[in-house]
Image (tube, rainbow, N blue to C red):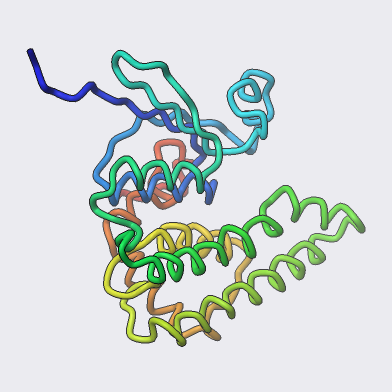
Amino acid sequence: MSSQAPKTTYHLYTFYSSSCAARIRIAFNLKNLTYVPHYLDMAKDDHESEEYRKLNPSASIPTLIVQTEGQEEFKICQSVAILEYLEELHPTPALLPSPSAPLARARVRELAYIITSDIFPPTNSRVAQMVKGVRGERDDAISFVHAIMRKGFTAYESMLSTYFPDGPYSAGETVTLADVVLIPQVEQARFYRLDFSAWPLLSGVIARLEALDAFKRAGWRAQGDTPEKDRVAV
């Protein structure tokens, strides 16, 4: 009798410039896992289609489909839930400190939640468009997004200064879930031309992370659905 574990295939519904999808792409790369990409064009509202809503009622990206031989297929629709699932199922290399270090794990989550709870929800494109729509002024949306991001990144810088001033990454010597969610948010901030010069520790962490292959390959310029004019080889 074969003791080989049943094969699992991951299907990821993604969009090249989705920061939430980028989180999952980074995690897959860091954990040396493969996935089958399914590209949705958010610019054409593919994610709003009736067919996709049956898959993901929130009409959000990403969605992960997990297919394991001999088992029932299932889906996970929220990026943080997907990240936690991958971490629990594939704990090596770890993106959270050991369970025997609960405070260290909490510090990583504190940093990650600044991004996923404080910064991203009010600055995503849906909300920014609503802010713009109040008076029809794009500058309103930009000012709103900048204010939220500055507050969040200032808090992040303060956390780095207090707990991890020597880096090299957000929570010390190893890449963690905090880093996984940080870089996609940075890419979104650059879209709004946010200046990062006020946060030197954060800027150093960003530079070191963006030099890593796992982050390069997950970037918005390196995806299969990236427009040709923006695509770069990694």
